[in-house]
Image 1 (cartoon, rainbow, N blue to C red):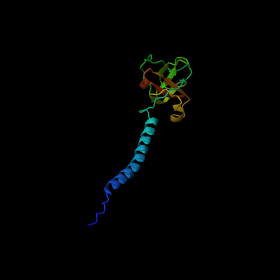
Image 2 (cartoon, one colour):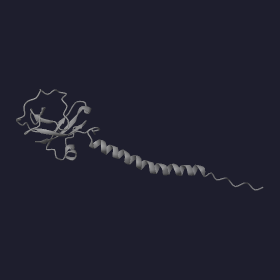
Image 3 (spheres, rainbow, N blue to C red):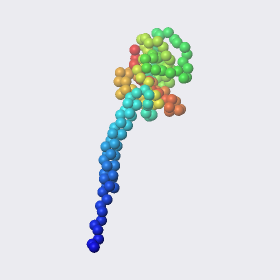
Image 4 (cartoon, helix red, strand yellow):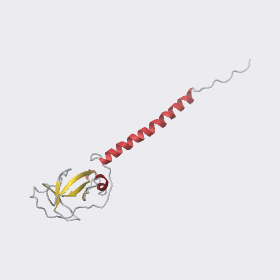
Length: 148
C-alpha cells in the first residue's frame, strides 16, 4: 500500500487570517475613537493637557466698579465672571467685580495648563489671558479674557 497523502490543516491559517482582518478593521476604529475623545477633551474645560509657557496678564486698569470682598488665594474664576487686575502686568492680582467698563470678562477657563497661547485657538475673541502657575500642575489654569 502506498503511503497516504498528508492531510492539510487549513483551520489554523483561516483563524490567523480572520484574526488579522479583525485587527486591521478594529485598530483604526479604536484609534479614530481615541483621537475624537482626545480632541473633545482638549477643547472642553473638563480634561486639559498640561504644558508650559510664559504668563501673559492684562495690565492694571482703574475700575469704576464698586469693590467687592478681598480675594482669597483659592478664589475660583469661571466663565462669565468679570475681573480687574489690582497688581502689575508681571504680578497680576485678579479680583472679581460686577461686569462693567474697564473690566475683563472671563471667556474661558482652561484647567491644568499654563499655556496662554491656547486662548488664541479656543477663545479667539479674547484680548488677554491670565496664567495661574501653581507648584502642583493639576491646579494650574489659564483664563482667556476679553476687555469690556
